[in-house]
Length: 300
Image (cartoon, rainbow, N blue to C red; front, side, top):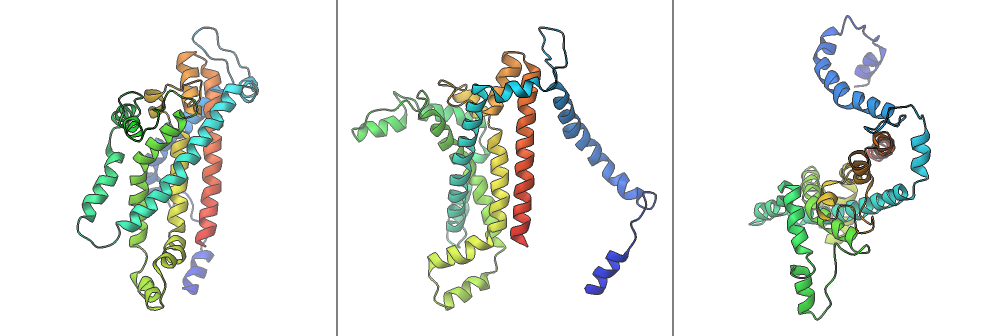
């Protein structure tokens, strides 16, 4: 193995002409990547340096949009709402997904049915799920307030209160996303050798100790991967907010992507919206790089 490694390390880099067939196979994917990601990102960056709008001639304003952005209290509120939503969705989703995966990883009758039931919300149309949850949160005829009334408690304006609206959206997102976490954790559990569990049980380890000292550490790489994709996904939340609250009440559910949409298509301030998009892109990119490095360090 060492001889093989030293031989590979001692090889000279091959020239383009020697590897032309490899580059030819990679070319379609590289062209798609350039057209779908790099070119739009470069275009957005250029737009963010202008005051482009349908209402006036376009001028380069350079970094004025960014200076305006960080002095904008409404944008800071959207950043806070996005962070609150991201943290509120990501970690409960991971915990519930892990617990469901552990519970459904055993051999018992009906486990396929339960896995399917828990995963169904992921397959449900976002718009359809949002409409159903609007009924669930209905202040006068919704089932949640109906249950509260049965217990003698007053009804709550779940989507109409600035204090409750974002939390209500978070609960819906957890319901919809934890099936994804469950499936990913189930795949990770299948890779843990069963003899480790058998050895721990022969040594007299309790179920809680097996979970905390074997299952959780051996799923660490899966946990980091899941955390990264959930955070990147929740950073870009838009559909549920657009349907259920439209950013209200009083901007309490207005996130960065929703504000970007309003700025671009509501106020036709495309340059300013492009600056928001660039800031969000850089934040997600930095987080992805840092998260990936931490994950690789943990694996090593």
